[in-house]
Image (cartoon, rainbow, N blue to C red; front, side, top):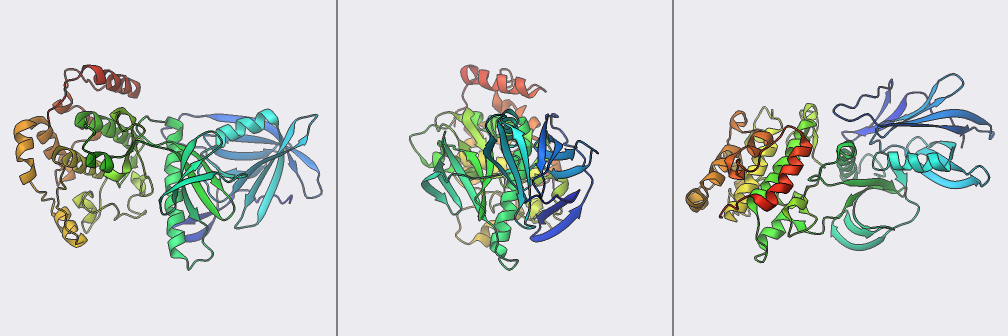
Length: 429
């Protein structure tokens, strides 16, 4: 359409309302390795005139500037869900030039560029999972996993798709809430994509068909921890499961990310028989620590939520994830729920708030597995100040400290975790 984007313009959906922002560009991504790619391209104007520009991808953010006067034309932050990228048709076989269109459905603004085949392929690689791509071909749906979540067959693999429709109007609060939650999950996972971790689910890409937007995730075909615990045929290596869960949480907390919904259903496995394939999933309630007071502060799943989340002040930090992981440890050690199985959710919430978990199920654990019992008590401390961090939990003798030594370097942790599979003693449950 050849309409130039206003410099520094961005339309964002936050907290259920559309807001217009004018801003200056700062490429500032804390705790992430700087990864930049730049190339030359041509902007296609309204009367088909060509203007040379520079396209810069920096950790998934997209900046386009004019070559003539170094003026900013477009800026899209990583994880933006407002603008759709179309990597399209070949327009010049001789020069191998391809189209790149950027369209904002809300403002009806669209701009077009020409890029070389090599640069088109590299930009797609750089921006996949960081920007919204237009889906040219609908995948085959294999099964419905949950409302808005389906298993799909793509060209190369089987993936999981989580979808949210674009709200028709501002009255449609359910669609707005779903879209905001999906956007938050995409924001978090697109940043984590720069520092991929073996125990965190991988975001493959963000796509749209113009009516809805989806995030495409790796398929954890081993199932979730709740289903595995209910299967009598699978023997659960509790220490190894907890090592992988806590190692994933340690990575998140080092990025100042708080998950806020750790529970059995959100712990997935690529292989049900291999605890080292554990993946922390469902980041719809996750946020950065500094966002906690502003982004859905009272959230989580009753029975897993740390007591301080329910407090009047609602002031908390990443230690809420440790408490939830402690509940998972309780589940695995006892095959019971610490706050009972009442069908009245208010009863569970009251017990959850009090922090008074059922100790009758822990009698045998205390006798047969004193180290597991000790770690559990520490993780379920009602006062978050007395709760250990993920790193401190990993240093607990429950994980056989003589063999499994935690290193500062994340790669060493991975190496030692793998080594432990062959060498560590198993804890009797």
